[in-house]
Image (cartoon, rainbow, N blue to C red):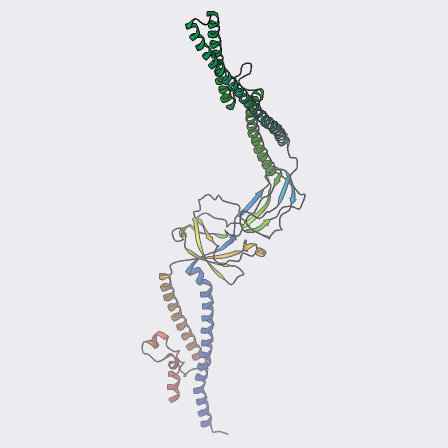
Length: 489
């Protein structure tokens, strides 16, 4: 057994080592508490930072305009559309509908009129062909008549020329006989009666020559006129009968040409009216709408045979090329948010954040007039404004299976100026850290003093980082200053 003095010595030594162990345990607890506090503080900063550095709207929905296809008449579906969610391309046929009770009376009248005009035009064309053939025959007859007339005139001219030569010979012989008779009469050898007879014969011979010469000149004129198509012989008209008939045919052909031109104009007008009526009937009896843009079928038509009525929305197509989000923010940010600013859009359920441009800002009092939208728009309360953010060209998926992401909710962040806010936050964090450090320091000192008992000095907490940076003991060694001093004692 140890003497009483020895036990006291051990007891005193145990009392001197206990504060060091307590201080070590308190430092461990302090580190744990500080670590937990910093972790909680980091989580809070991570959660609150977006709302501090940005204006956040959590009620945004991906939206797009709808193109409704309205039935123009009462009828039924002849060819149904693609199912809901199917992709459609521009100018693609969406569906086909037909009218129930088409009115074709006017079209029937136009068809009958067109057919009648075609028949009349064909009859005029046949008559014109016949008259043209008759005119050719008459011209051929006229040519033959002229040829025979010229041939006859040439024969008459030859006969007249021969008779004229004989008459000239007879006139020459009569003149010679008259000259001899004059010589004999002057000598008194020929009676006067015989001389007178010789004079008469000579005159008749000269008259015959003149007659034949005149006849020859007339025949020559007839030949010239006949060659030109005019016949001037007595008892004959200026032109032959074939020429008269050809002139009549030419007049008739002129009349037929005018009639044919008039009928052709009427037929062209009737055909144009008929084409317009058929096009109108196709529009009113058969409805074949095409897709105005690239999109997805938002609401499909009925099945084959389903009835439709005038003004009914048969099908709707969502425009996947004009997607946007519309958010409501405080009206106090009207000057801070401008068209062209870049907003950050985060679709819920996605790990991506899209950078999208602001395309319009509308005040709370603006009247909203626009196309039908595929998704609901946020309710704007008093003192709020609408901000439209375009989602085209930012990499958002256009898959038809997800309806081009239309209807998905999103959070939209609008950046704000945080230069002054960051300095204020840094000052507040520093003050909070100092207060936390002092609280932990006083709490540890009180706990160590209470467990060490009377006569044992409580260990001191390390100096705050600010004190260490101003030339005091380092924070890693200042905590053991008191215990080491006591141990040396």
